[in-house]
Length: 305
Picture 1 (cartoon, one colour):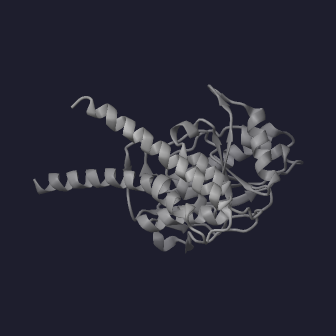
Picture 2 (cartoon, one colour):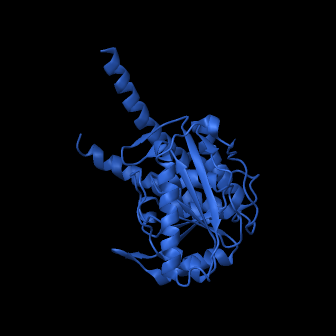
Picture 3 (cartoon, helix red, strand yellow):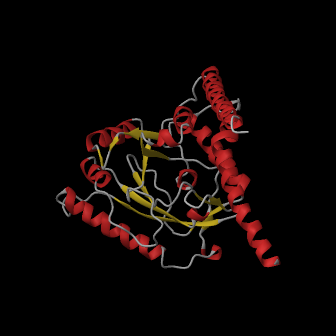
């Protein structure tokens, strides 16, 4: 009986943690930061947004490789895509240096993400047609990021994967890196899917995750004479790197260092935050619409009682 009670408590705790994390990410933290007069740049906004969640839930990240984050110009970071937790883990492990590339469809599911774009410039959107990506629009988005001296953060698997073995990568970003002489670095974080999992609606606190940085892959046009040859090389390297990590043990005592969530790199253009009055109006609009929707749902529900 006691064992069953413990299981029930654990079950509801994991569910509660999930909604708590989502509330902090998309309600409490942005509301608090909108009225934080100490924030002057968009990068500071990004750092405070995610380090707040990091601090509240007690998660830890450990660098396991001698390689560290590269801040070469025009670099593209390739990260493993596991769950929704990627969206607040990967900014930390890239020291708030990567700009997410996401489909516009994300806005339909997470409207707050457009507000995040407005105040941080840490995400860019592209059109994704049914069943395939518009490569022309995709490359225009990547170019727009690089032209403003921001680094690109991509999930090259193309979808969330819970399997512990590597798959073939999508070709678009690898072809782009070849055509634009953009170096690539892999950043694979083991254990981040335990933090927040939208598939099971569960989240854990005090999770220890292990971060692996690869070497930097610079283009060698003599060795790789076309985009397909470059793709085959990067695809093979990713699989080897990924599979090695997911078949290894991970111990805190083997870590090189604990990653500090308050540190960010300064290789990007420092962009000032939007005018505070504009932010107040944007936030007021979001809150008003949310309250209106809640009142409508409540009104509709009361008709059944």
